Amino acid sequence: MSVDSSPRAGNGRTYKPAAGFGNVPRETLATTQGLDLLKGMIDGRFPAPPIAETLDFGMAEVHEGRCVFTGLPSKKHYNPSGSVHGGFAATLLDSAMGCAVHTMVPAGKGFTTLEIKVNYVRPMFESTGEVRCEAAIINVGKSVATADGKILDSKGRLLAHGTTTCLIFDL
Image (cartoon, rainbow, N blue to C red; front, top):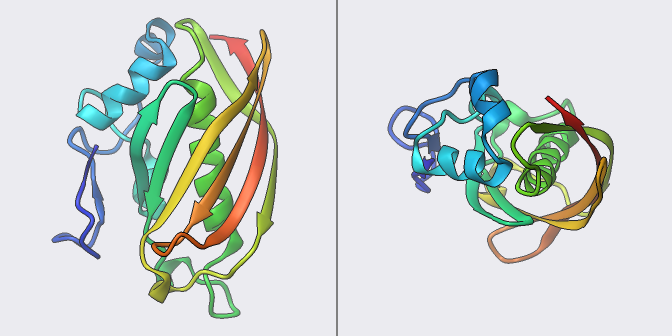
């Protein structure tokens, strides 16, 4: 995915993946190792998932057992209290931690979130600017994996952190 880090690039979107937004065919999912699939999203062989377009975030880096997403909170993410809805942080963490797990999933396997725990440390506002969500594997077993993640602002301040438990299953 090519990421234009300037606020509200050109068409109003910060994230413009080379292959656009969409879903990878199930046949491709079933025959591609997780890390290869995610690298393919970054380099433009596969589309980014539609949720990335909806919430204006995307994968910035992916390595075995680790994934980094960036996102740009804006007023479209606000709750009635005038700050970014907690669901933005939760979805960003769920995506990054899930993708960290996905890097360890072999071809023919998939995963889904069983449980997510999020701790909110600071509020986000449109003025927060781009945020970075770093996630890493804690443990990967045959059928269950765990990961943790944290969201940081541009000054390195912690905004939220969380953990996930994922089920690994046959496709």
